[in-house]
Amino acid sequence: MKSIITIQNLFLPALILLLNFSCVEPYTPPVTKNESNLLVVEGFINTTTNSVQVKLSRSVALSKKQTFPAELKASLSIESEDGTKVPLVEKTGGNYEKTGLTLNSSIKYRLRIVTKGISYSSEFISL
Image 1 (cartoon, rainbow, N blue to C red):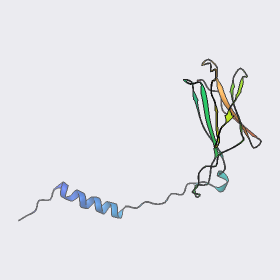
Image 2 (image 1 turned 135 degrees about the vertical axis):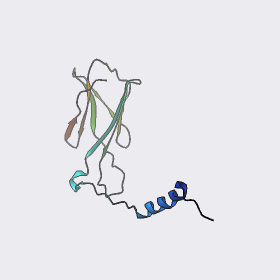
Image 3 (image 1 turned 90 degrees about the vertical axis):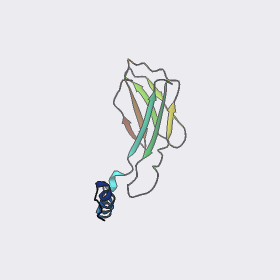
Image 4 (image 1 turned 45 degrees about the vertical axis):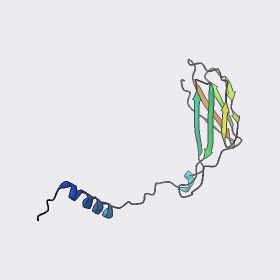
């Protein structure tokens, strides 16, 4: 009795061969030791609740299997183009927030951070 070769009959063996002979090469990104300990800023302005939440941490080398260390005791504020500054309050674990803001959609705002003697400012943005 002759067997009929169909695509279905060839698919599984071909897939097994492909998986056995395919390989994944490790990828080492071009990162130097000097590129760790960078300030990482994750933030959100919620215009519905008039609140701001920002999390500060530091980057770590990709070779290290550790969590990002929180950036504590920083000074954060939301600044408007008209010069108004609203400080954020430090909560726990590098989290900073402010609620009850009065945000005007016709004014641009930016985030200002001062930590370890270094000042960082974002660009002014519209809400």
